[in-house]
Image 1 (cartoon, chains in turn yellow, orange):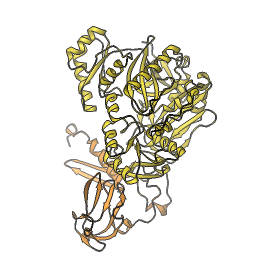
Image 2 (cartoon, one colour):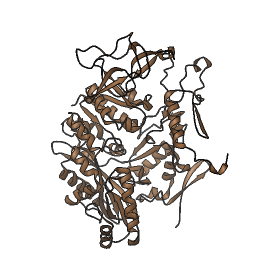
Image 3 (cartoon, rainbow over the protein chains, first blue to last red):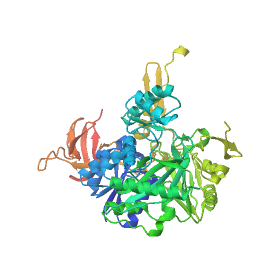
Length: 459
Length: 157
């Protein structure tokens, strides 16, 4: 086992990694910006190094500072968490060059899967269904029109280097192609420094399902039962659950088999997630994330596997240790992302002093968070404050447990997404299960006696 | 003033000033350009409601982790801090004399030490003129971003 890991991240995920290190007897090094001097990851790691001022560009994205911190502290490996440098192929390559183990796949794999058009090609080559559309990037308006004539409208134009809905345009008819193509390309160039785009058939009513994978350097790969992440707002996931409610068994097995084929063909190492859309009884590959994901605890709860610990074993050259029964789901788990955003003011980000912090407890409840009473939420980083994960015998019981735990959860000093989650759990459609990614967009938030309620539009 | 010809509010500038006040711990920054004057003032921490005796030592904005105890900066000493994470060297090469010794008088812009980061030698210069009072980092040891390296006693203006 490696001796010392530098955690190149902050917030709850830095804590998550430090905790896994502690349990494995691996020493941990935290890096932090001057805005995070009072943060728990800085307090709980064995060592810590201040790497820069508050802006992420100068601290958590500052490659020379992070590499220097690893050298000064004698770290053997760097765990990037999610976000920041987690899918930066150049950073992974620099780690490889200076002899630091990067906790993740090889830099070449990150680069290939990071280019969404190239990832589609890789999936198609591995024999996995991809959404009908262009084979690689589209170079011209004419090419988009050609694809449109072939697969039909509506289409969606997406940035090759993209994610999170940036550089994305839905095209309803051929007359809209030109403006949409140029707009998407410009936006992609501005956001990702790469204006190349590709085209897919636009599926309106779809569910987002994904498969957690783990692979070691001895050729063993593991795929876990699917997660459903259809509750999203503007392409940001808010609630994730596993298994996906009401998904036919052959589809679930198909997702796992397709994911295993893809990571097998890539020679993948470490943890990753293969993302699919599911619509009208068919599933299609959309992208692969070559890193640990925010929602990994959902899979941990129903499998009993510590995914971060397995990542550290893989990077040490050891074999995965996954018991056979871990792959058949034990009950049902749901994760709620508690963000510092005000749902009744268009999800305006919040920052400031956490006055009261009382996370829920009791059976089947897990909270991953870096908060404490008296903590100042800095305005410089993302808004995730805590992840509440509930686990119970079946979906109905985990919804009841979720309602109970959300109700217990007290955070004061700022508005959060807690009341939104309660409203989602009260929604009849959600309770039935199998809602699409349009769930929140189709609903209005109404305030009722201090509580939020979702009301469906009828359009 | 003609109401209709007012320039748009320079919000970006204000944002930078707020940042500056927060990071520097200063009470107030005021800038004026033409007709526009902006003043950004730090708000005393109301939620903490510190006792009056403690209030004098209180730094505003960013909480400093209870660092309200004595610091040499209160005696008018000036800290030269490391701008990067790296290895601290007092001399330009092994065997050479250190750039500066305690008691030396340095002028603004004079090299005090080197912080090496990823094989790059960053010369750290004095940002004020004055006397070197203390060397705070150990030669060939690691230093973090913002770590004090030297205390200087600035010259009287």
